[in-house]
Image 1 (tube, rainbow, N blue to C red):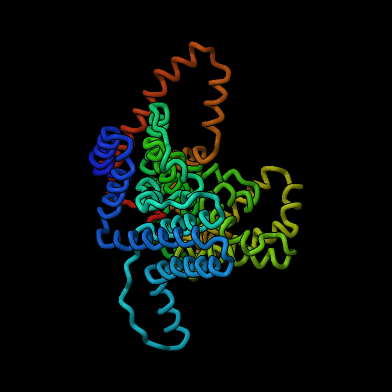
Image 2 (cartoon, rainbow, N blue to C red):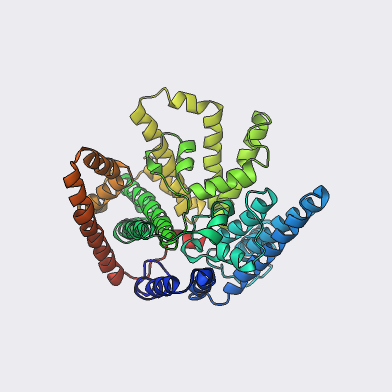
Length: 473
């Protein structure tokens, strides 16, 4: 079930909200869990069993870890078994076909495995399940004796299938003691509307441009077309994913939960390191705290630091998909970040500030080519065209067509990806008189959000099936 669907918006969500606030507080977690399982089972009823298996397994691991935490050898074995068990679940459903294909290619074999369908959101809820056990082990959150609380943490429908990856330590107390207020509910509604607009009004429309251009063989593209295509995709993936995160955070607030931010205007970054502190923050912090730091982080010399960065970015790329292009994409950013740590960052900060932003944007956008392309061959050919290597024309009629018809949309998307609008609103609020501020807040804001919601619904009703990009991860 999609957040950006009429079934969710006009049927599922109203029923959930009505019954949630109708029942006594002591029954709300049970009700929310039941709705979350129904939400997941809507499109994939069989795979809800996989998720329930993951929940049960990690609930038991949490109990055992809490009991043997003071016995070093025993807890080491338990934590090792927990990590291997969760990785095994991911491997079976996400990577089996990938490894079989590569083994066949490497050793000229013909091992046959029927394609294994990928359970929706398995990467996200597996990481959340591991977070629970690790946080119990570290005493960052108390063990949940009630299995329904563990199930709610992992299966909570707002963030279940595409994040943000909610850390157990951030919501452990909220599961038992959260407080729902009208103010928080209203804030959640506004946040949800903004996320829906990002998806329906911007991501889907720039995504159409990207899809059309990436369907074209690279040797038929002009330089201008290649840049329009990858800029459109860069905007699509940002507004698609940040829109989903906004909706998830907004839905969480409606039910009294406070999820951490997942995006902070990443395209205004000046370095790649900064970009990854602003993009998919929940995933970056997960790898930092549960992989990079346990490996030693940057405490054991430069060589070990670079080794740890290589491991983290290899895993980051592999987490995104069972394809060598994703692994290359992860290592691409890992190498750049290593170079920035070594010497490049000092040189960058001596440059004129606009050039710093240009440096980051070119590298980020180039990396998205690897992420979007299905094969290395297409990615290589596309990048060649982008940077003018070969015989591709600088500009052609198709590039002129896309600029003529979509320049306003692209400009609006680019501006919306910066904090300019937020800065203007803050300025107006700071300089406005109390009377003007009250009028704007009590009259202007509801009109604005209602208009945005109606426009989003109009696009939703007329759109074809268009799932969120990160659903496949």
